[in-house]
Image (cartoon, rainbow, N blue to C red):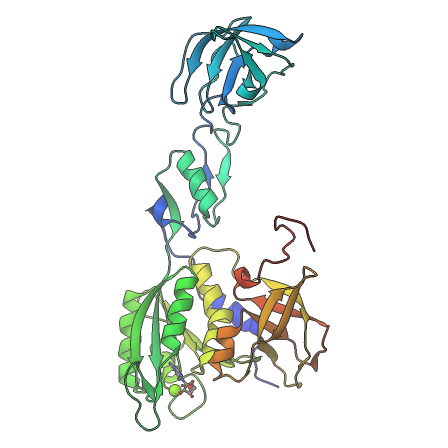
Length: 424
Ligand code: AMP
Ligand code: MG
């Protein structure tokens, strides 16, 4: 099939048209999922001082060389306190977890392993300790000058904790892209409006805004516009000023009223790329940049499944790139086809909406999620993966197939290798 653009090529063209958004400082509380825009180096060590890993007694390990050792209790150190009083030979100091190890001491004996005299004045230790036992060294987690995170790190809960532990209150990250979502079509009615003849309820905007949010971007609802060139042009120009990127659905096919394609071609100053991608669903796709800021516009097809698949293939990776991510795509697992996936040769990759589950064998297994036509959104709703069928005859039952995981967290956990408990 000549003229069809392979998916990787279409993806590459889109990625070439976007760049990471400028960096800004945000409070840690607002930074979950954002991507660092600079290398982060520890200015000071963590922990900041050598401290006890246990509730117990700080002592000199050499004093326990020939157990039992009877040591004199010379004080008490709570977390948050400190002392200049040294622990001398034959001394032990009661210490709580997190309290600084006093001068002279080089080990901590856990409280469970000492015998305290009735008057509390001495403790007896029946085993040998080595220097460093139950002691957390200053800088033992992060040393001053260490690179804590490279630029391009996605901030997860642990990373935010590390930054807080370094004493940072904010972090330099790429901005979360603000993404406008616009639906186009004369036949579209917003819920709960009643349908006239030939009309349908508009659904793409709701689903696309949800995908935008789920991907960690900020969605802006740009509403529904009819197939009118002036209205679409004004809506796009206005959106380009307010948003970092715009996602439209409908009007990019080869019909008489494919207005987005026409308007985007015009107002992008000829930079628009309109493609027939070698994929099913989601064949037509338009991409251009408009306005002073050269705001990227992703013109997705109108069929509800096509719109979501096109978003996954092209818009989401590009928006992730704008957000500073290095890892742009959904993970792909080599899965077992639990039923045959037949197809015809047509020059396109077929993406089949499937339910993917972890099986008792620890492998990902896939089954069709239902009707596979591009208007059949119900199967898309059931699907948590897209089975990738390259051009050819398909896959037999029991064969292997790539599965693009749209929601890796929904594979089920019954047999995960890391799950606690015995494996079946
Ligand atoms: P188009 O890409 O504009 O030719 O639309 C293709 C198909 O998708 C048509 O059947 C449209 O009615 C339908 N469609 C377009 N936009 C939407 C939408 N926002 N919600 C639901 N269906 C839509
Ligand atoms: Mg239309």
